[in-house]
Image 1 (cartoon, rainbow over the protein chains, first blue to last red):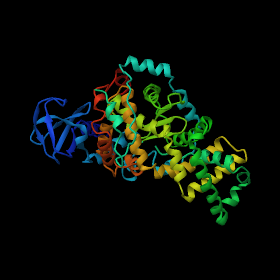
Image 2 (cartoon, helix red, strand yellow):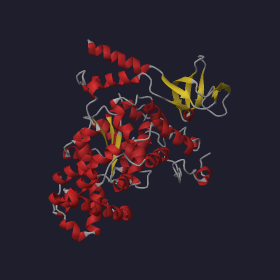
Image 3 (cartoon, rainbow over the protein chains, first blue to last red):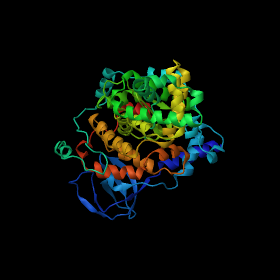
Image 4 (tube, rainbow over the protein chains, first blue to last red):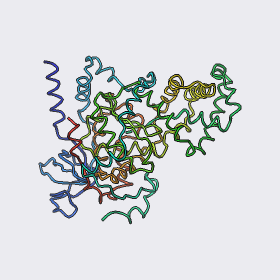
Length: 172
Length: 294
């Protein structure tokens, strides 16, 4: 009974829209395209509800109730009230007793990794699931995955700008 | 995400090649005390420098031994999730992404481990794990591909070897000395693996170089794009991680070993920005993802 209550609580918390904060002034568009109509603009620090994502875009609902699309990278998330529900979710999933919530979730803490006894049988099991290239390619094709050429970034940290090469070789 | 393994046998290998005679003389009991320990540590430090120049020279066999020991330790802490369909699926996706990397022919192996914590890990030789806690939260195959692309990059760019070399801690040092001693006295298998696993813990707790995490994020997006996925799925994953309370124990290890999700997003913003948008309309989700994800 209690468990069912918690399960419902978990489902409802996952169903809630994800909150986000707009980090720079941005246009709100009616579709996830750069040439879509501009519905208005969203000032920096606006709190939004994230509703869905498509490509580099995110569908959001503004505090005014207005909805539209903005670029994904213009939004940051931060923890709201997810802590207790997440902890609860873990108790449900692991079947641990309630006291686990306050002492930390079982499994894979730094201490547990340090105190682990090697399990060679599991490594063998892991290797037994390995795929081969031909199968991986076949499966990718069957799922409409089309490989494309994408140049690597010469530098991946902001201390130095990515090379011009990267920009020149961009796919149209 | 993921990422934090030490490679103890790399040092053993370096010491045997560069300091063959003294290495054979190492005695674990003597080394682990006082003056001798500091001498031992300086020997290790020299070996580290030697290794630094020969990282790329590690044989595939040596990398496999290292990765195997790391995985044995991690799987000792949390076993594989008991779901063959999920394990095989993650291997299909992972190998497809890895085939777009600089090392398409490495013996890549992927798995999901049974823990509610949110994290992912890589080890030399092509071993990659994500946790059930992360698997449960991802919403598309593109998100999975981006996470695996991040981990694949740690392997191909040998970030863990770098982290090992820069490790100056006494604990890591003494663990490594014992591994070297075992290695040279011909001990191997489970016993040496166990000690190797202990030595790994230090980097586990410390994490990799911050810049290497940023590099893995950006290159992970590139690998995902090459494999035909929307590379901005990594942004979704980081936004998801950013929404988890940092005090939550499920993310404690991840957050203590990585830049924050906000910092990682800022880096992607600055380095990638709109540059991969030409690939953003690629695949988000697949039939096979929906079949295995309940």
